[in-house]
Amino acid sequence: MNRSSFTILLSLVLLFGISTEIIAAPKTTVKGYLAATSLELFEKAALYRAQDDEEALKKLLATGLVFILKAGLKVEVVEVKSSLGLVKIRPRGETIEVWTNIEAIE
Image 1 (tube, helix red, strand yellow):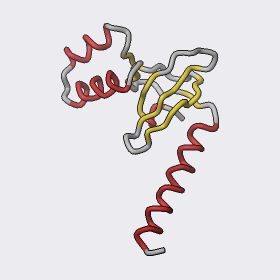
Image 2 (cartoon, rainbow, N blue to C red):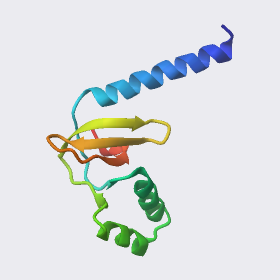
Image 3 (spheres, rainbow, N blue to C red):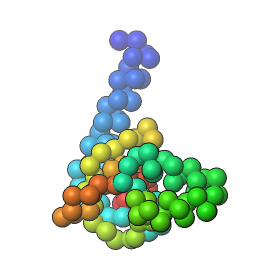
Image 4 (cartoon, one colour):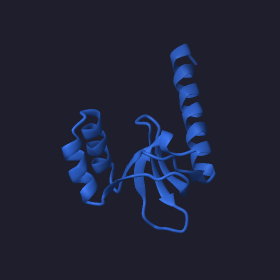
């Protein structure tokens, strides 16, 4: 196995291990992070926030499909997109799933 193949293999093993660790245990939300019912809406909201377009962000928030997380909500991790720094979470006891930043859970 050459060096670049080994590096790729090691990266995949580490990435899988990190993803498994994130999903394995219940987490708690951190206050102030965006969350959305779809990945597309989350990316749109994050873009508006990055562009400092408060009017557009307020319109998205008014739909109820995008919202600001409150602290202390117990959640399960449903899916991880490590390359994007995103997770799909589900409040314990609920069926709704939302996308947010990995940093939004601890």
